[in-house]
Amino acid sequence: MRNILIIIMFTLFASTTNADIFSASEGELHIKSDKKGAYIYIDGKKKGMVGDGFTKITVKEGDHNVRVLLETKEWNYEGRENTFVSGKSSIEIFITTSKSPSKYRLARLKQEKIDNKIRKDKAIAIQKKREEGEKIAKEKRDKKANKSLIIDKSLDSKRGTVSELKLMWMRCSIGQKSVGNNCKGRAKNFESFGDAKAFLQKGYKYSDFTDWRIPTTRELLGLVRCSKGTNRGRSCTKGSSKPTINKKTFPDTYSGSYWSLDKQRKAGSVTLVMFDAGWPFHDNYPRDAKLRLVRTRN
Image (cartoon, rainbow, N blue to C red; front, top):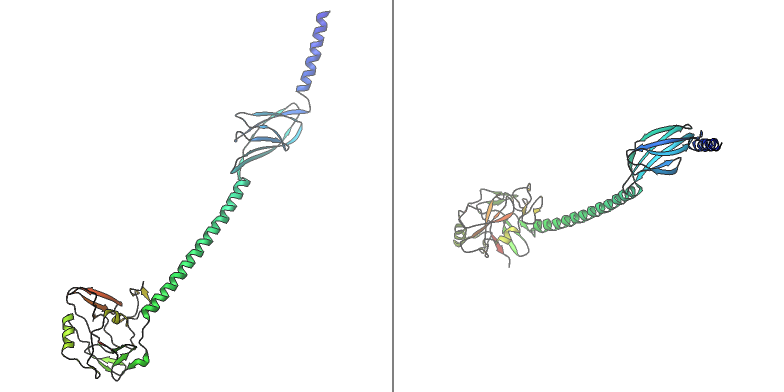
């Protein structure tokens, strides 16, 4: 009698336990994802975490929204799945996540974009200021290089002279003759600086003056005119009109070298001014060149 009572009680206990575990109104979701460590949300509530295998979660019978979410500093990995679970059933779900930038990353990239724009604008402003400074400096150099005290009213075509504040120039090269607006004839060629000096020592007279002399390098460079500016104030920019001189004031000028007197050069060294590029040339041996004389006005 006692054994029969024990069997009846055990049967009632087992029936009650099975009823609780396998309720007709509940089922199981077996969830797995490609992102280990992601949180599992069922209908918006956190219920577990993705591991190596399937994560089992008991849910009520019905439709459910399953979401897995892994948040890192730079990226978020998220996946969703809608499923229906019936009572006393289990369903396996594999959720693949998609990658999206985190709020931190979006904010960082936005700030970087702002910072890059600030740096770019600053660099552009610096470059613009530098270019403006270089332009002003170039204009000053060109103005200085092209500045000439020679003015049209100082031209005396009858006498063949051009006067400035302190100097009087021969309008034409030695060997040429001033006729109207031109210099007729071929400029005489002097094979050496000594030949040029010897020419003056013979007592050269021109336009009633006998105190003509060979111009200094600086004086001769003062006649240079660059139609397209200069290269750092040293020579005329490539493409400048040749000869590099005011052609109206000094017509038919030879587009080549002219003798000059440079007192700062060593003995035996000569200096020529090139009117094809508008720059001085130093040499230690005789070289063919033309001659334009100057005198100091009293």
